[in-house]
Image (cartoon, rainbow, N blue to C red; front, top):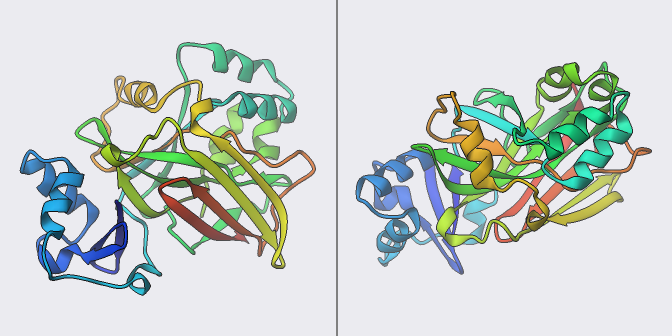
Length: 284
């Protein structure tokens, strides 16, 4: 079951069935409205939607979800790093202080950082950025969870754009390497937690330049050292998190050292049973 925001409508795809939930329940104009109504009726989001969709009204075709916007109006986006061994090794290779990443990988406390606000987050087919003052830039494909009332209620696809040259120069530069214009994207839809085996999902990334593939790689969320529930607990430690916050969970797929993004590149990130987030690169 996939949930999209299309214009001012919530659209749900369940197998071959596509329904405009807003036309069936006019009070539900956003994903946040949907979550509030479902939980307010003591139902899971999946059960509420199945009940709502059991009607002959509201049917759409697949073209109606071809141009979605960000799947949820997330007030904040946070991110975790060094949650995969491959990520630790790559960041050690780029850094003048490699022991920092080994220590955080084995420590009890994970690396967490603020990533984006709602005004800055990008959606499907939007442009993502590489910094003008950076020389080595990569996208990071990440399973991204959605928090409501302190609990994980669903998942989407995330792109954590990063400057490896800035972070590699000094780990204290991580905010500049991670937080800048067009540095984060989510989409194209989100999937309720009860509809997904989120600890075993294939993650694939393909980068094209002038329509030619210049990088492809894949991984699986079963390789995460720190699972989503643990990350969510750490996120809330002494930290009030707004409802509908999205949280990127780290990457296990990173292009090699000789690769860097260029303006015009197309990034496609696919997470099994969720969807494909596609963005083009600009310099910011």
